[in-house]
Length: 226
Image (cartoon, rainbow, N blue to C red; front, side, top):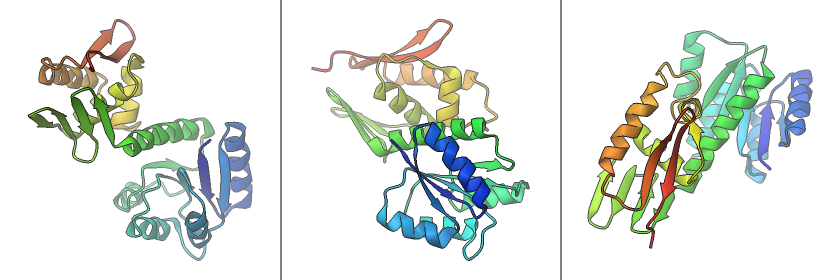
């Protein structure tokens, strides 16, 4: 069960989000401002933070800055009435992971949360080993004996995602969502291009294969890992 921290000064919004999140199976913690949220983070593991901007004592921007300055990399979904491009840009520059404007569409919020948590799960795994092949998330490298390749970021994330769930089929839309983000302007054909590049890079590796599933998407098959 994932622990979610709702940082919001409006008690009615806090209660609404708490009810929705609990219904979806999340464990919910609440804070009225950034100071109280930091106190909770010192004593409780949190998987994702839903953060308002306009709050007393310490607003969302200041909280995000304090969080990242302290090297706390807990994912942050900012939810606020501020909707101008400069507001969004400021949030991303401070290290938030995604952004929603109020009034909150709760269905969209849940989808964004799921995408952020999946990306965080992949990031936390950090290393993947299959026989003679190892993938290092921190350095974006794939190594097999003396062959070591550093991949472009999106290519690596795509390969790491597929190999983390062997034989599971992912649609192009799912992969676009998780690797490029919900607001990406890239077409889903981008996935095809990256898959083809990965196939060419690793066509001599017997440990895995990337397979297109007609009408559905892609999956990775692990093999020859002895």
